[in-house]
Length: 341
Image (cartoon, rainbow, N blue to C red):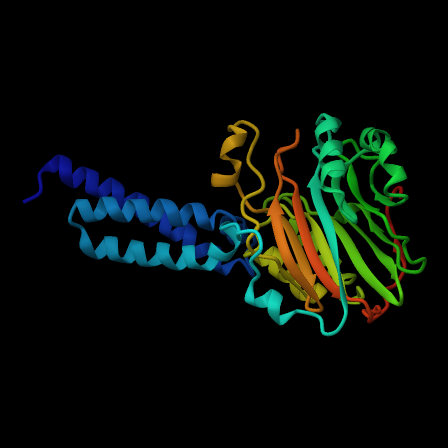
């Protein structure tokens, strides 16, 4: 017979398991309820905590409850494993192999960075110089950052800014290659800028830099709803990169990907952690909210986190291939609703 202290501990653990399990389960039903989608972002954390509680329940000989908790934790962990576990360099996913473009192709690199509006610029500039990417997507880009990046114009003469007049900043695309003249889209209120890059020899690539606001109770869902009128018109091949403030398994990213006919890239791992916690913990317990989405005619070779700058987000470097004959398919409307470019 269990003693009173043991029964009390068991009751507390069962209560915690019920709360965590309910939060984990609700996260799978975020399609209609934004609050549930906000819970989904912590699915990996809930799964880990629930598994630990299951072990405690086993020690307390509450086998039925432990089995149920462990099963739910395992289901949650499996659903996010492809996104939270960084893919070793040099490996490819089945999706990447399936998306391999036929015929001649060329390799390009894209660097995704949330700069943090008030961070020291030197580490970010050094990262760009070291990695030497073909295209850079940037968030929290304000006037201060525009001035700090002026020395990079020699290497990235083609720039697209949207909403950089705000204090926190807007979004930007830096490119070695020229932009096409007929597809500029800037929606500062939705943290969205898109340009088509002319790669020469009839090849082109659509690039989007995205910065969504925080999830519920903030209007993240409304931003994606507004973008539903823009994303379907984006021409492919297409790569979208940015700080989504949402995990790749969430309804938010899923809806965005469906509308843009893209797929989230797996194997990046956690990229953000609140500044009140040690930065060393970011790759371990942070959230994978800096996402890269690609259309099916691109093959991702690698997507890797880079050493921290002065931002609370880790940079992400993506290497990918596209066919040299990839001409734009579907022509988007010219939409410019930003305050500045």
